[in-house]
Length: 474
Image 1 (cartoon, rainbow, N blue to C red):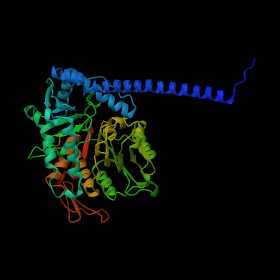
Image 2 (image 1 turned 90 degrees about the vertical axis):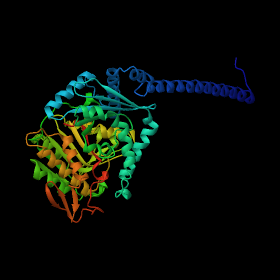
Image 3 (image 1 turned 135 degrees about the vertical axis):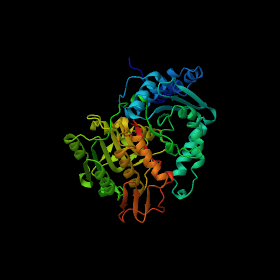
């Protein structure tokens, strides 16, 4: 039997159903909201269980530095794997193995290296030093907790890159503060062991600090040690190979197509010419500066060094936001491994005109992971864009030092070659004078299209502290 309902009753029934549905939805939202809070708590717990968590605090407090090193290596390996979405998994080297490896490299390179882990935490800064054939050493700096440390890093970079302060030493206060926190607590051990090369393995917020400019009150750090920054020791190529007979593939662009919307780099022809005069290999510029030509050249000839004189940007966000500018296209950081620069092995990748979004976590990972992601054993790149003349000066001197070395029979160390170039700028042996670049190679006449500098002196850290070896220093 069919029952008739009036429109009013139907409307009331409908409204009741809607009300019930709304209440059900609200209940669901409350439940889900509670679950979201639980998930957030779980995520927070996982975060606190990392290097900044209570478990790591307990490990450090009981002096179990072998386990601490294991946690650091695994934790920072995961950071780079997540950022690049790549499986970099490498065998774990315990602290004792690292110490033995450093001893072997000291013999091979005739320069004693040390590894420094710099772990920023909310409670204090932790430093772990590994010397050749020695047990790890821990130093804790309570005053360098994150809320004090990271602003000091920002201050240092800001003072160095402020173009209005190039005739001042306004950078000294933060440079000395950071030296006292990061280097001074380990200085006695470094000097006693006659350490000459440092490998910095650093945590979030410190991966783009201009380490070369740290200052002890008398000297810059780079005047005392050569160094590199590494993502993790297990992710670093630890095999030494001489660059004495290496060939260089030098490429770049002085101008770019209008569609690229990039500023010209008028010093690039001189930069490539200076390299070609010192090293065997090939050089290509402008329209010949393409990814296709680069890969074609590598198929025809083995090159130990690839030098790219072009714009490169390390930006916030995912790796595809960061890139190297070729003549006709951009090579995203996410595509670098596709070029297989680890086969045959590339000893050194040089990017001479980089710019990094300083203080950004993702940009930090891109910069510090450049050698790892590219497949190169080592990379040389800049944290900020340096003037055309300044870049030309540093690059020219770097390749001269890399070619000649400190002595005829001594091994060539990449980080030491960069160090000597930077010292040349600090001490005034590399300078711009009377329209010429003066360096250990002699004088190079600068073309009029290269913007003139307000000073002939390149001793300010703005001109040299941006450049850094990433990956293996050897």
